Image (tube, rainbow, N blue to C red; front, top):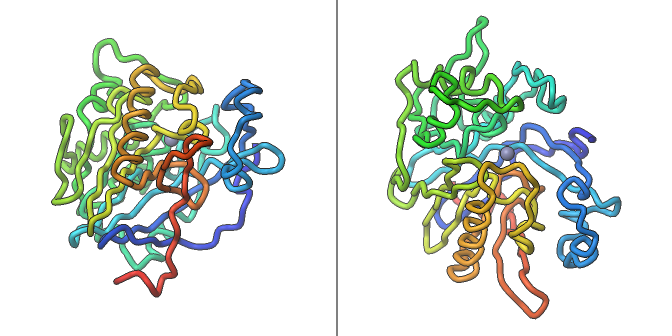
Length: 308
Ligand SMILES: [Zn+2]
């Protein structure tokens, strides 16, 4: 597995309606497509639009760990704060004891960590909530001291190791204690159930399956709709074959329903789908033609064309 296969080119910016979006990359990995599926017929039928961005000549694909900074209605919302530095993940070397310039990359946008109003974790896997906190003086403390952290109750119940009947997952060991508990103890958590409005045009909506309480952020701005869907899709292959089970979900039957529902919404409403881990261009529109589903990567605009 190759780590950081491509040079870092700085934070990338896009506009969605009136909202501004920054992408902050933490790490990237190159993985073989065979890790997703052994179905040779499916691999042989891959649509041409996947090449070379989402499947390269060596039949590999990028998995990027990143955060979004969404500026909407005057609010700064961070979505999925990556892995974090100094975390012990010996079973997953690309994330083990990271020492990345994530905060420097974040603040290179001109947005400071103290400017953040809300933090939203689609779920509480280690690569989606790590930078909730920062290791300082031997303690994990909230990275965004002025933010409210929006956390799904089902995820809190699922991952709190203090609860009776807790079922641990080795790959996620320590995440709740290091990345969630300090936020609770600082009084910065807003624990929500099901649908929740962050502010006008920014709604949290259930997208269960990958984990028990996995949820998405639905943005409506300037006549455009976008869904930040976390790990509902790891690769566009799961859009053309939503029944593909890579065995990383807690409830695959539910995930499959969620995928189909989001695909249908995207096609019907011309909504932008923004998964967590796709290689840039990281989000896109979906439409159907005679050859099946087509993912049209969302065009980055030149920075000069983006207001603000
Ligand atoms: Zn993930």
